[in-house]
Length: 231
Image (cartoon, rainbow, N blue to C red; front, side, top):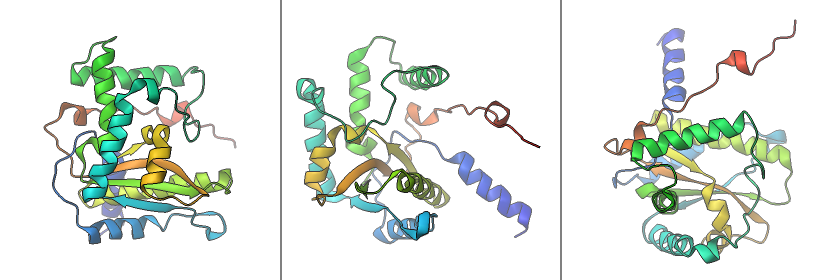
């Protein structure tokens, strides 16, 4: 294979990755999951600390966790009183991030036929996070809470590797920050250690392309918008 062909294949996998929100029930073999995580673990980390820990949730454990999470989310009076494990988003939105966030929301709900202000349908769609969008495999990522910001940066590269390695093998993913609102349930279910902190979750499986939400194409800013050359 030529260098140009290798470049094209890598680019196709990166560009082809998207957040899938509807999966087929087809099982994912354990050896394939292990292979993906072993490849992803080649991500760089400061002084080779490798700050990632992964909990693979399948079968009865997955079903039990889904029941706990969806039940808690359904009780909004209880859910809204919960504190997140950490603040993923800014307290107050500002430009250009506000507009980008709104657009992807409008585009997603548009594909699903959910009109602006239809809070019941929005709530129902958001609740699908907690069933892993029907994916047969859920991944929960944790970190030692005593580590600092640098290890979180390293963790991002590991997560990207998981998604890219999955896509290269015909699988799809959806990284999900929604789980951090219910971290207490997750940490208890998965028996986290005292110093273990939830980073995020991720759905893993085979995309169900009959679902309209899986045809969402999010936009990216051209490099001219975020790059400055200094010569």
